[in-house]
Length: 291
Image 1: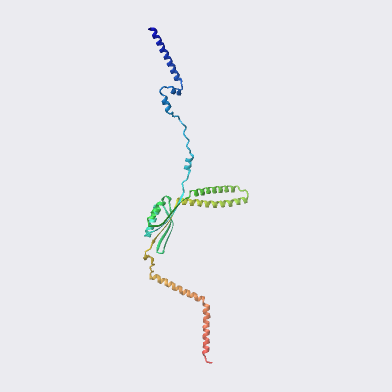
Image 2: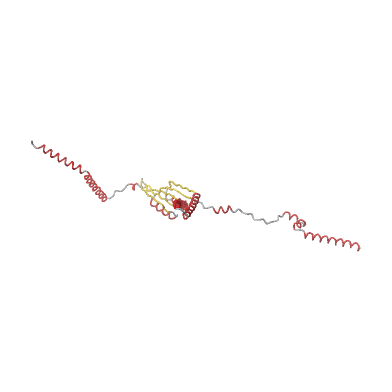
């Protein structure tokens, strides 16, 4: 019986040594091999992706910089508004109130009274942000007969004018620098004439830039309105009697003075006529005496 137990114990000892050796080999293997040989974890390792750090994707910066560098658009607004009003004076007062409310100002005005109408024409300068609101408010003062609105993008023209102005200033500065280094009187005279010409061109370009700035900062609005006058206002009242007497006295005195001036101009003819009449009278007296 003892001899049967000994082989069993010997077999169990050999099996334990074999298991310990396999555990040491598994511990020394790399992590990938451990995952492949680990029992019961093969399916999980193959189905779950491993998150690996990736380099951040470079975003294009050129488009962002270009969008920020784009200048604002310069738009020039222009409009003409013609309407009929019932009360000319009240409409004028309302127009002045609207100009003050919307920050606009009056550039020119012309009032006439003819053909049974009282008319007003105004040239207005309006801030672009208040342009539409002011036109709408003015249209409520009477009956609109015509309304024309136009807008033009002058950004390209303004930028081109600014570039030309900068180039002109650079050329003028270069000419002045050359003038300080002129060696001969002839060269100095030529450079002085060139500098004067460039100065005139610079002032012209500066005026053009100012015009573009004014067109962009102020919208132009031409307002025309009129009132049909009642029949009683069409007839001109007669002036008082006293002014008419003074006017008649002046005309009469002017007539007398004109006659006196005419007599002075005709004195030779009057003298000859007087001598002729005297000679004729003497001749008739001689004919009437007896022989």
